[in-house]
Length: 106
Image (cartoon, rainbow, N blue to C red; front, side, top):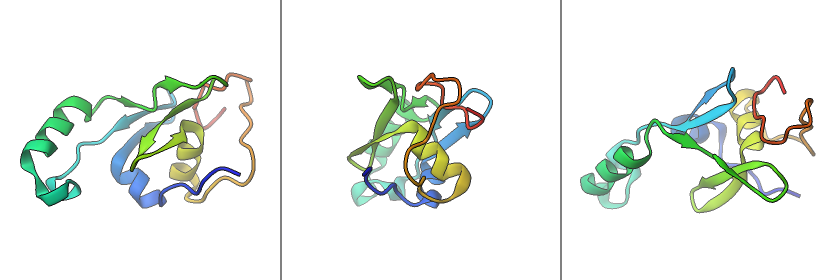
């Protein structure tokens, strides 16, 4: 059974989801999200990741995946929780058979 996902509010705070393309992007993070409110680390993170695609790696089974809070999750499960507010129950089927197609309509 897949591990429990972070809360939907946390996911929405960290990520932006484009339902037309299925792409997740990292949102800029405030300094309060970094240990010791380190402004340098915050600026470096935001320069490197904010506005860029998240969960762009593909696993051996063809699913997009990526890290949140030191744990790896599949993108389609993250998207489900962001859109519906709850963890998906069981498997999520990709209508067109393309596991990397993370549009909610698929």
